[in-house]
Every structure is written in structure tokens, then in C-alpha cells.
Amino acid sequence: AIPLVTAISTSASARKGLLIRNRTAFEKTRKLSMIIFDKTGTLTEGDFGVQKIKSLSDQYDEVELLKIAGAIESKSEHPIANGIMKKVQEEGLELDSVEDYENITGEGVKANIGGKKVSIVSPGYLKKNDFELPENLEESGQETVVFVIVDQVVVGYLALADRVRSSSQKAIETLKKEHIKVVMATGDNEKAAKAVSDELSLDEYYAEVMPEDKQEIIKRAQSNGEVVAMTGDGVNDAPALAQADIGIAVGSGTDVAAETADIVLVNSEPTDISALIVFGKATYKKMV
Ligand code: ADP
Ligand code: MG
Image (cartoon, rainbow, N blue to C red):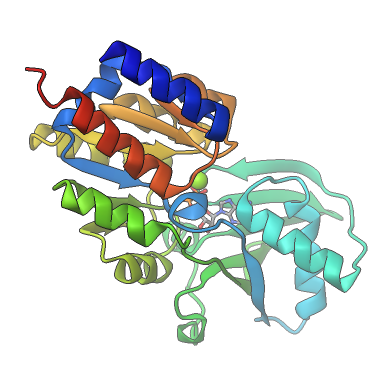
């Protein structure tokens, strides 16, 4: 089996940037019963576009909301930040400088702008911190919504949309044929998560998941006898990648994720992941 794996890992790695760092973990593909995908950038393109900007305050109109969001997001590399920066550029806006920028892990970003405390955050953050969730949000349907908070007041929100990758459907069909349960865990909101889950007929999904929760989800599945593979891209995903029986770092991602993972895929095409698993199963099937 070793020469075969070496062969695929070298030839595929030349083509697609595949690295099997831990062959013992890769051998577990033969017992694999569950795969947990992250959503943004793996099952979806991770290419957000701003669909809507909505003011909830007389003091900030849509352009001002975009300027505030842009000023902070210029410091972030999150796919949501990239989507907001695209819009800022389209509108040709000039941005204020920010101070004390901070990432709120899995929930958003914050900074000071001109003496005001500003944050751009998830619906989960509002709930957790006892902000009232603005009404009339149903119009934003399955989009990813982030709120703009200025000095403890929710002054507006931006709705962004992403798309399911064209290869996700095929990858999931392949995995299900191998009797592998396909699960998604995302930090994004319930509606956006459900839309992707429905579109792809996933077996299960978890929304508004904090990075540390991902590890817990895997542990629980493992204690129910599941052999679990997990994909991840961020620094945040490192503990979950380590917990999984097979940790798969995807995307150009971060070095931390790649260093913890058993398998590294530079391109995060889901079909590359399913093909790798099918190959692993076929290769190690006869081993005890
Ligand atoms: P995932 O990769 O599963 O989509 P993340 O943990 O990266 O989840 O993000 C979870 C949520 O936190 C996002 O859906 C968003 O609401 C919020 N968030 C994270 N980073 C940012 C950011 N730079 N700007 C605004 N919101 C963010
Ligand atoms: Mg992420």
C-alpha cells in the first residue's frame, strides 16, 4: 500500500497541492463513518457579495454603515471582510483609520473609530450579549447577516451572499455511497446554514458554532463510535483538526491549521476530498 499512497500523493500533489502528513491517520479512511465539513470556503465558494445594507438609526445611513464596516474589515482577512471590501471599492469610498483592532473569535471584529467603539458581529453575538435582535430580519432569508454596533447600539446591518460550490453535490453523493454520514459545522447563522444543508441534503448540520464547540461535536460523535474526518481552514480550527481521526486542512488556509492536520489540500474542492477518501478506503480495505 505504501508505494500506491506515495504515488498518488506525489502525482496528485504536483497537480493539486495534496500532502498526506500522517499516513496512519489516512489509513483510518477504511473505517471512516462521518465527515464534518466547514461551510464557508469549503462547501461554498467563500466569495461573499454585499446584497443589502440596512440602517437602523437616523445617525448612520447606508453609506456611513459601509464606511464604518470597511474601516474595520480592512484589517480582517475573513471572507466576509473581503466581500465588504469589494463593495467599498466599487463605491469608491475613503475610509477612516481605526485603532485597537481586535478579532472576536468566531463572532466578528471590533475597533475604535474616531473615539467610538465599533464592532461588526454575528447574530449569535447579539444574542449572547443580550442585544435585542432587530425585527424585520426575515427579508434577509438565507443570507449571512452581520450587525454594526456603535457605542453599544445596533445601528444597522449588512447582508451578504455566498454560493454553494458546484462540486459539493457530487462529493456528497460519493461520500454517502460509501455510507459516510455527511455533516456541516459552521459559525454562520441558522438560516444560512439550513439553506446550504437543504440544498446539499446533508445528514446533519450545526450552526452558530464557536471554534471550541467544533472539537466537542467531534468528541461526542467519537464517543458514539463514529470515526470522524473533519475539514477546516482557520487557526480556530486547529483543536478540531487535532481531535478528528482524520484532520483535513483545506484552502490556502493558515499554517497552524496545516501543521495540525493529517492531510493538507491546497485547493478546497470537495470532490478532491471525496476522491481521496474513496481512494483510501479502496487501498486499506483488506487491512485488519
Ligand atoms: P465559518 O468559517 O464557519 O463560516 P467563522 O468562525 O469564520 O465561521 O465566523 C463565524 C461568524 O462570525 C460569521 O458568520 C460572522 O457572522 C462572524 N464573523 C467572523 N469574522 C467576521 C468578520 N471579519 N466580520 C464580520 N463578521 C465576522
Ligand atoms: Mg472559518
